[in-house]
Length: 250
Image 1 (cartoon, rainbow, N blue to C red):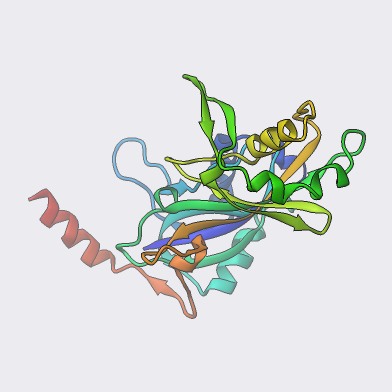
Image 2 (image 1 turned 90 degrees about the horizontal axis):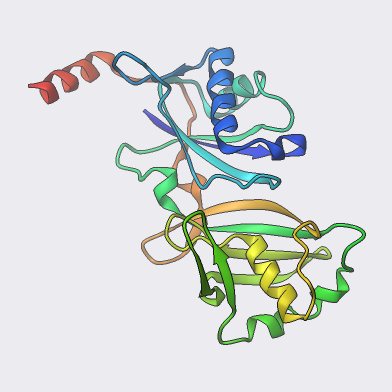
């Protein structure tokens, strides 16, 4: 059965990369003795896939992974069981059962929320907070976007869905995913240029609040909404699974 797990990544663990997070969960699942499913073959591995990986140095309370299990308890019990094997900086927030035809988390990602805070010693919040509306009123917001393979000037305005002040910080909702992925630091670089300020990559901190998928009607909903809360234990019918494998091999 497929499940979707929502988790945090905070504190000093913001400095570990995506592969380290994946290995961490693999070990945590083994320590917690949950019945996670493994692939077949000579080198079995846990069936886990992550949604949009978080960049180094960012914190989050809206991270997601999908995994396959052979048996699960109710949602509350699964959260408590896994968290006993975790450190405080990475904690499971939700655990839900997915339908068999649900799209995986990685392919479902469409947007994400971020809170941008100001580090002391660089800029004052008031130098930015009063100018967001003017910044968004531009027809185009062009900025040099760099990747491992290329550099190109792109218009990022269509990919900034919301930008407003929240508790003396900047709240951003931006396009996220494999196609139109906009990182929050690129928005702040463009915003700095708009204000005729020299952009300093260390002047801001970024915290991901939520990650979204897009429904058929175009509305954005948190990735966790694709699953349902588990109210009682669920066990995979292993005999049926074996029959399915036999049919597919024949």
